[in-house]
Length: 134
Image (cartoon, rainbow, N blue to C red; front, side, top):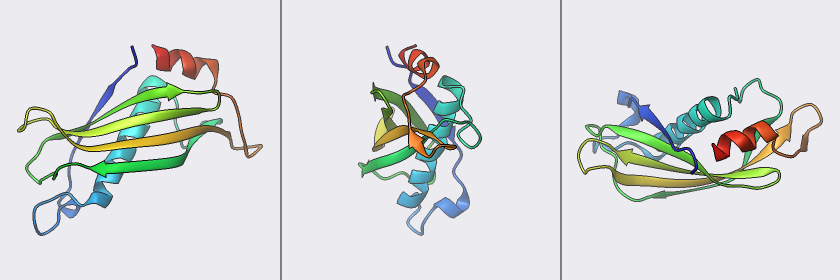
């Protein structure tokens, strides 16, 4: 069973537009918070200083429903697939208070293991693979 990490999100006033919606750009930032939380909690990886690290090579996001100012939200993150040098990370922004856990946003990112010194891709470390498989 893959590990699913839930990251609580605190919205800021600046995230909200005049219709009391969270702007889509800010939702992307919430997904990034979920990514770094997954890296830290599952892979024991500080993406800013760890070598090798993971770099995003592809990302897509589907905005399913509105995220509003008053919504309590979390980001769910899990690895759907681990290849030789890459992982496919799935994420959801979920409304955790009203709506009973309704998924508002879904995202898929392909991340590649990258060596910062050699500037080359490399195989996923065995420790990461073991942590992902839990």
